[in-house]
Image 1 (tube, rainbow over the protein chains, first blue to last red):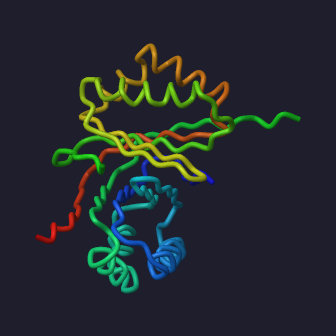
Image 2 (cartoon, rainbow over the protein chains, first blue to last red):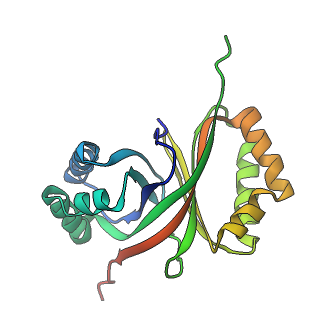
Length: 109
Length: 109
Protein backbone atom coordinates (compact mmCIF):
# COMPACT_ATOMS: atom_id res chain seq x y z
CA UNK A 1 0.00 0.00 0.00
CA UNK A 2 3.02 2.28 0.29
CA UNK A 3 4.09 3.39 -3.17
CA UNK A 4 7.01 1.46 -4.59
CA UNK A 5 9.28 4.01 -6.21
CA UNK A 6 12.66 3.73 -7.94
CA UNK A 7 15.95 5.01 -6.59
CA UNK A 8 15.95 8.84 -6.38
CA UNK A 9 16.02 11.30 -7.99
CA UNK A 10 12.37 11.38 -9.04
CA UNK A 11 9.53 13.83 -8.43
CA UNK A 12 6.69 14.05 -5.90
CA UNK A 13 3.57 16.19 -6.17
CA UNK A 14 2.12 16.88 -2.71
CA UNK A 15 -1.53 17.92 -3.01
CA UNK A 16 -3.12 18.96 0.29
CA UNK A 17 -6.73 20.11 0.50
CA UNK A 18 -9.60 21.13 2.73
CA UNK A 19 -12.90 19.96 1.31
CA UNK A 20 -15.98 22.15 1.36
CA UNK A 21 -18.66 19.85 -0.01
CA UNK A 22 -18.71 16.18 -0.73
CA UNK A 23 -20.92 14.50 -3.29
CA UNK A 24 -21.21 11.43 -5.50
CA UNK A 25 -19.56 13.27 -8.37
CA UNK A 26 -16.55 14.09 -6.20
CA UNK A 27 -16.02 10.43 -5.29
CA UNK A 28 -16.42 9.29 -8.90
CA UNK A 29 -14.12 12.01 -10.19
CA UNK A 30 -11.46 11.29 -7.58
CA UNK A 31 -11.49 7.57 -8.50
CA UNK A 32 -11.39 8.35 -12.21
CA UNK A 33 -8.48 10.77 -11.81
CA UNK A 34 -6.57 8.24 -9.71
CA UNK A 35 -6.98 5.67 -12.46
CA UNK A 36 -6.19 8.12 -15.27
CA UNK A 37 -3.07 9.36 -13.49
CA UNK A 38 -1.80 5.80 -13.18
CA UNK A 39 -1.99 5.43 -16.99
CA UNK A 40 0.14 8.51 -17.70
CA UNK A 41 3.67 8.34 -19.02
CA UNK A 42 6.10 8.82 -16.14
CA UNK A 43 3.65 7.92 -13.34
CA UNK A 44 5.43 6.01 -10.55
CA UNK A 45 2.79 5.60 -7.83
CA UNK A 46 0.72 7.44 -5.25
CA UNK A 47 -0.40 7.51 -1.62
CA UNK A 48 -3.52 9.15 -0.24
CA UNK A 49 -5.25 9.74 3.11
CA UNK A 50 -7.85 12.15 4.44
CA UNK A 51 -8.85 13.26 7.93
CA UNK A 52 -9.30 17.00 8.53
CA UNK A 53 -6.82 17.58 5.75
CA UNK A 54 -6.61 15.46 2.61
CA UNK A 55 -3.12 14.56 1.42
CA UNK A 56 -2.38 12.92 -1.90
CA UNK A 57 1.20 12.40 -2.94
CA UNK A 58 1.85 11.23 -6.48
CA UNK A 59 5.28 10.24 -7.75
CA UNK A 60 6.61 10.98 -11.22
CA UNK A 61 9.65 10.32 -13.32
CA UNK A 62 10.26 13.95 -14.26
CA UNK A 63 8.77 17.45 -14.52
CA UNK A 64 7.65 16.80 -18.08
CA UNK A 65 5.33 13.97 -16.93
CA UNK A 66 3.84 16.21 -14.22
CA UNK A 67 3.24 19.03 -16.69
CA UNK A 68 1.62 16.65 -19.16
CA UNK A 69 -0.76 15.21 -16.54
CA UNK A 70 -1.66 18.70 -15.27
CA UNK A 71 -2.84 19.64 -18.77
CA UNK A 72 -4.66 16.37 -19.58
CA UNK A 73 -8.20 17.33 -20.66
CA UNK A 74 -10.27 15.27 -18.16
CA UNK A 75 -7.92 16.38 -15.43
CA UNK A 76 -8.35 20.05 -16.39
CA UNK A 77 -12.13 19.66 -16.01
CA UNK A 78 -11.69 17.99 -12.61
CA UNK A 79 -9.36 20.79 -11.47
CA UNK A 80 -11.97 23.39 -12.47
CA UNK A 81 -14.72 21.58 -10.55
CA UNK A 82 -12.40 21.37 -7.56
CA UNK A 83 -12.08 25.15 -7.56
CA UNK A 84 -15.78 25.71 -8.24
CA UNK A 85 -17.29 23.21 -5.80
CA UNK A 86 -15.26 20.79 -3.79
CA UNK A 87 -12.36 22.58 -2.16
CA UNK A 88 -12.28 25.37 0.39
CA UNK A 89 -8.52 25.49 -0.08
CA UNK A 90 -5.73 23.46 -1.60
CA UNK A 91 -2.01 23.63 -2.12
CA UNK A 92 0.11 21.81 -4.68
CA UNK A 93 3.84 21.42 -4.12
CA UNK A 94 6.19 20.14 -6.83
CA UNK A 95 9.19 18.45 -5.24
CA UNK A 96 12.40 16.76 -6.27
CA UNK A 97 12.87 13.62 -4.15
CA UNK A 98 16.57 13.66 -3.39
CA UNK A 99 16.81 10.76 -0.97
CA UNK A 100 14.61 8.07 0.54
CA UNK A 101 14.87 5.22 2.99
CA UNK A 102 12.42 2.81 4.51
CA UNK A 103 11.64 -0.11 6.73
CA UNK A 104 9.54 -3.21 6.27
CA UNK A 105 8.87 -5.65 9.09
CA UNK A 106 10.03 -9.15 8.35
CA UNK A 107 7.26 -11.72 8.43
CA UNK A 108 7.33 -13.97 11.48
CA UNK A 109 7.45 -17.50 10.11
CA UNK B 1 -5.04 23.69 8.63
CA UNK B 2 -2.95 23.55 5.48
CA UNK B 3 0.64 24.40 6.32
CA UNK B 4 1.62 27.98 5.54
CA UNK B 5 5.04 27.80 3.98
CA UNK B 6 7.35 30.45 2.52
CA UNK B 7 8.18 30.90 -1.14
CA UNK B 8 10.16 27.90 -2.48
CA UNK B 9 12.78 26.56 -2.37
CA UNK B 10 12.36 24.78 0.96
CA UNK B 11 12.33 21.12 1.97
CA UNK B 12 9.57 18.56 2.58
CA UNK B 13 9.89 15.26 4.41
CA UNK B 14 7.19 12.83 3.31
CA UNK B 15 6.75 10.08 5.89
CA UNK B 16 4.30 7.35 4.86
CA UNK B 17 3.55 4.38 7.09
CA UNK B 18 1.46 1.28 7.66
CA UNK B 19 0.76 0.77 11.32
CA UNK B 20 0.89 -2.63 12.93
CA UNK B 21 -0.28 -1.96 16.47
CA UNK B 22 -1.83 1.04 18.08
CA UNK B 23 -1.58 1.88 21.74
CA UNK B 24 -1.74 4.77 24.18
CA UNK B 25 2.01 5.19 24.03
CA UNK B 26 1.87 5.59 20.25
CA UNK B 27 -0.69 8.40 20.48
CA UNK B 28 1.26 10.17 23.22
CA UNK B 29 4.54 9.80 21.40
CA UNK B 30 3.08 11.03 18.09
CA UNK B 31 1.68 14.13 19.82
CA UNK B 32 4.93 14.76 21.65
CA UNK B 33 6.99 14.41 18.46
CA UNK B 34 4.66 16.76 16.59
CA UNK B 35 5.14 19.37 19.31
CA UNK B 36 8.90 18.82 19.57
CA UNK B 37 9.32 19.06 15.80
CA UNK B 38 7.52 22.40 15.80
CA UNK B 39 10.11 23.77 18.23
CA UNK B 40 13.10 22.85 16.09
CA UNK B 41 15.20 25.38 14.23
CA UNK B 42 14.12 25.46 10.58
CA UNK B 43 10.67 23.89 11.09
CA UNK B 44 8.12 25.48 8.75
CA UNK B 45 4.94 23.45 9.30
CA UNK B 46 3.33 20.07 8.78
CA UNK B 47 0.24 18.24 7.51
CA UNK B 48 -0.94 14.80 8.55
CA UNK B 49 -3.73 12.31 7.75
CA UNK B 50 -4.27 8.58 8.17
CA UNK B 51 -6.61 6.10 6.56
CA UNK B 52 -5.12 2.80 5.38
CA UNK B 53 -1.85 4.62 4.94
CA UNK B 54 -0.60 7.33 7.26
CA UNK B 55 0.98 10.36 5.59
CA UNK B 56 2.82 13.08 7.48
CA UNK B 57 4.54 15.81 5.53
CA UNK B 58 6.77 18.19 7.46
CA UNK B 59 8.33 21.27 5.91
CA UNK B 60 11.82 22.54 6.69
CA UNK B 61 14.08 25.42 5.82
CA UNK B 62 17.04 23.28 4.76
CA UNK B 63 18.69 19.84 4.92
CA UNK B 64 20.62 20.84 8.03
CA UNK B 65 17.37 21.34 10.00
CA UNK B 66 16.07 17.93 8.86
CA UNK B 67 19.31 16.22 9.85
CA UNK B 68 19.29 17.91 13.24
CA UNK B 69 15.69 16.85 13.97
CA UNK B 70 16.37 13.28 12.82
CA UNK B 71 19.14 12.98 15.42
CA UNK B 72 17.31 14.73 18.29
CA UNK B 73 17.44 12.35 21.29
CA UNK B 74 13.71 11.97 22.06
CA UNK B 75 13.05 11.58 18.36
CA UNK B 76 15.69 8.83 18.08
CA UNK B 77 13.90 6.89 20.83
CA UNK B 78 10.54 7.34 19.06
CA UNK B 79 12.06 6.15 15.77
CA UNK B 80 13.38 3.02 17.49
CA UNK B 81 9.98 2.24 19.02
CA UNK B 82 8.40 2.76 15.61
CA UNK B 83 10.63 0.05 14.17
CA UNK B 84 10.19 -2.24 17.20
CA UNK B 85 6.44 -1.94 17.72
CA UNK B 86 4.25 0.42 15.78
CA UNK B 87 5.03 0.16 12.10
CA UNK B 88 4.70 -2.72 9.67
CA UNK B 89 6.40 -0.55 7.07
CA UNK B 90 7.36 3.03 6.50
CA UNK B 91 9.12 5.17 3.94
CA UNK B 92 10.75 8.56 4.39
CA UNK B 93 11.37 10.77 1.38
CA UNK B 94 13.52 13.92 1.58
CA UNK B 95 12.39 16.40 -1.07
CA UNK B 96 13.32 19.82 -2.35
CA UNK B 97 10.11 21.80 -2.95
CA UNK B 98 10.84 23.61 -6.18
CA UNK B 99 7.45 25.21 -6.85
CA UNK B 100 4.07 25.55 -5.20
CA UNK B 101 0.69 27.11 -5.92
CA UNK B 102 -2.65 27.08 -4.20
CA UNK B 103 -6.23 28.18 -3.97
CA UNK B 104 -8.34 29.53 -1.15
CA UNK B 105 -12.04 30.15 -1.52
CA UNK B 106 -13.06 33.72 -0.87
CA UNK B 107 -15.53 34.16 1.94
CA UNK B 108 -19.05 34.99 0.80
CA UNK B 109 -19.93 38.24 2.52
